[in-house]
Image (cartoon, rainbow, N blue to C red; front, side, top):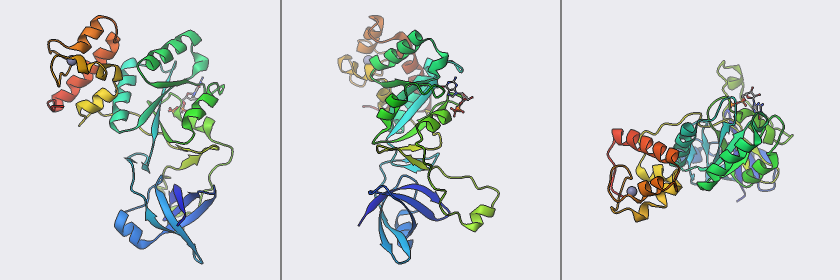
Length: 293
Ligand code: GDP
Ligand code: ZN
């Protein structure tokens, strides 16, 4: 059975991008909806083509499901911050890094509005996060600087742009959007009439494979319910030193013989990063005590 990816879902009709690169309009078999619930943009589906059109017969199990916009099987978050206007906050960047990695999204850090920044400062900020183990790109949605580099990280993956408002997420989505837009598909008369025709997210297929979600994702993050493993994923340089702590399950806060605090004292881990880690740890611990690792 042929397979494809749902790129749009409006009024009970799904637009599916086939393996041949064609867009077809499908409806879902009733039993599919019964067994798996509503079909969501991003779903990988198997379909058949009969005299009455294309019909979705099965949905692959989802790797993940983003709540807002509702999209399945997202591979990475492009975390956007502006280099200037608004000024980037390192604390807020780290907070997003924690939240996105807790949502099991790989992160690409994108510093936008390069045209407004001093090149040296931009490069220093990029190098800082690169040295901590993150992928970083510098862009300007205005001049299109960094567009190729950004695209090279988007090809072959499904990406959602995240970050605070005003940093240029929408401008960047427009920058990477290829000329041809998706067809608007068939909208049921009932939907057309309604006043609240909020359109669900769509996937924009990229020229060389991969997709971009056309609506920004997380614009803020909530650390509620997080566990220590998730916190440490956003602090790879801290996680890497945990092995050498005197106590297994060291939280790197007040314990003696902590290799992390030793590394901070020696300047091997930036003090600001450790400070952010300790703040988030305290915030999480206020909700629930550390679990043993
Ligand atoms: P969003 O809230 O993150 O989606 O941000 P927008 O894409 O709406 O952009 C916010 C404002 O910043 C708009 O006025 C954009 O024109 C402007 N903007 C976005 N990207 C750039 C950029 O790279 N350089 C400059 N100078 N302005 C930008
Ligand atoms: Zn420790």
